Length: 435
Image (cartoon, rainbow, N blue to C red; front, side):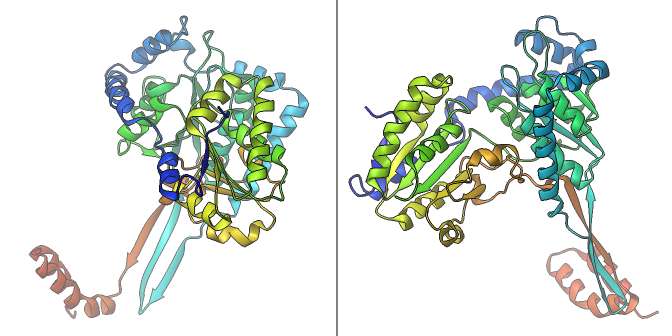
């Protein structure tokens, strides 16, 4: 049995391949049970605040959790910053600077149109207070903090608060705290999971209420975000990492295999799919995957991801490969082909597109420029990756002159009367009268 399922549109038929590639962000049956538990968690945080947070953190393994230790002290922040080796600190600074330069290009301008003495326009203003969720516990993701905080700072958000799960001793990885220092996080709190999302949404005695929450997480934080939308703004509902590689016979199978492994190692539910019309490349990729899997330190994550959520697909041609990629609307699409610019315009649904064999998706995970918080589970068909726009509000401006009000009043009043709203019509006709 191959390490990754092999499919062929030529042998299996296009429809069967489509069925095999269908996926959801989370198992719907599992979500029913988890959602019930998340609702209980949200209610507990709403009613009991910090006390509920402490109780839940103790249940999750941090036995010595207390209200006093929920917030990371300034001394701990400074010590973490000082402990990071210079090369790593330089890498974090490079990532921050590249992200900042990229996101500055996204800043929209407020605009105004003057017409017959009237004014129409839109004003963009930053959200005042944002909460950032960064996964933690057994792993450290300073890159995720940068990829959320930098576009927020570029947008002009003044207050940024970080929640992230600690390990069983209450420790947060120094790299995460160092990244928090780099982007000027206002406060860091040792709390994760659905209860951290609820704390940001409602506010507690220790954690401030925010206007919007951003950042990826597991099933509990994601469901909490979905349930609390409306109480608080949210960014996306990102699920397991995904990559779709489109490759032709010109690329090195080693590079293709590493591209698949790089995203599959995020976790056992990650998705890694190769689409290629080259049978020799596909078979060589299988051999390379098998060779590297034997010695990988993350084999326990890679094997279930490759066997249960991934595939190598032999297509009739590159056109068919691109069509399947569009149907899948993957988080990352890597165009590892001889002429990537020839095909990029045909990729209609993707969180991010990486052009050419040298441009591994891993650059996007760290310091290419765009945020790596991207739509998954086919949501790239209707949503986009995190950007500066996610941290801005847009307010319309309308100022009519007396002359413009007179010219528009009759038409607007006719519409109001047709909708059965007489007070609307009266307000309009009064403004339209000559004075």
